[in-house]
Length: 94
Image 1 (cartoon, one colour):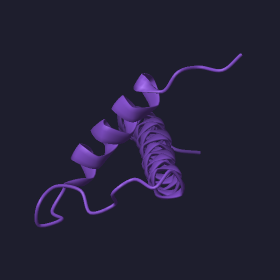
Image 2: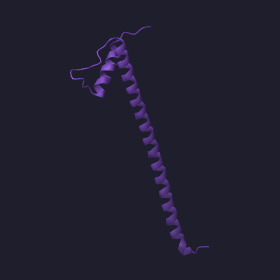
Image 3: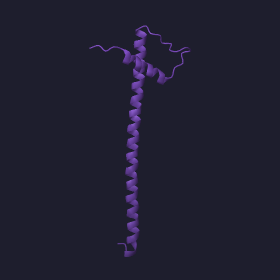
Image 4: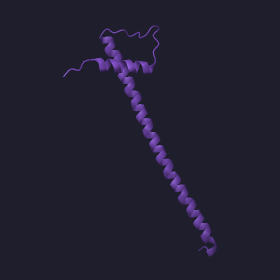
């Protein structure tokens, strides 16, 4: 068994272990929050792409012009805004 001189060393080591355990729990919690945030962002992106594709398909089936603005250049966000505005402007059935 360790002598009385080892008690402060053991106490210091236990404190270090406790601090490391606390740090590990904190890092694990941060990781889980980051993972959940990334998954939410991925779902939002997939939904946005799906909605954009659906809007373009509906526009094509209605005989709409798929070229967009002159030159055909339009940002993803601009396309999303147009698709959302078109959905809101469409009359509801039911």
